[in-house]
Image (cartoon, rainbow, N blue to C red; front, top):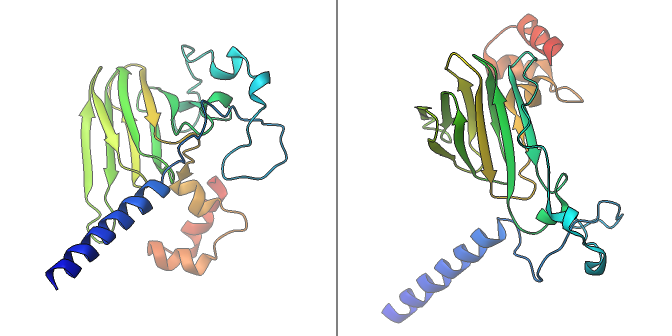
Length: 218
């Protein structure tokens, strides 16, 4: 009996490990698979270019040194370097983002459904935080200074806010070639077609007028 319990535990552990691997970007089966953005083949990711046609430009991206335009209502700008900007990232399971923040600017609460995130502050001071899953909904937050690093676990709602007196800059690495982003407010109040008013009224404990106002913004 003890042998069978041990064997079952071993199989279960292996199965969970396999599921965990499958839940992330697939590992490459060749040196590289540069994305063919013109391909009409539908796959989980992007189809590969013919390796014989690959060039150095497929593996490079320029412009991350340029300041983003933060003249918008949220006061931040995101410059992504995902597989759509850098085709050589295809199948490699990584991507990069530059975020610029005006004074008091925010990167509003959002999630990345396919990636964990590690953020490094290059300039300024940022308040960062994420919220754990229900029912705890614990808010974990910290103020970061230049050179500080913070990790946001995959799928959790998180945000950043510039709490310094000047411009702030962060570089973010993500564990997917295409991490995706779900901005909470835009998803809830700006979906097309709209989520029914009575659902949002009950969910947020406000009246219909508030819901309609929020819809008009998003």
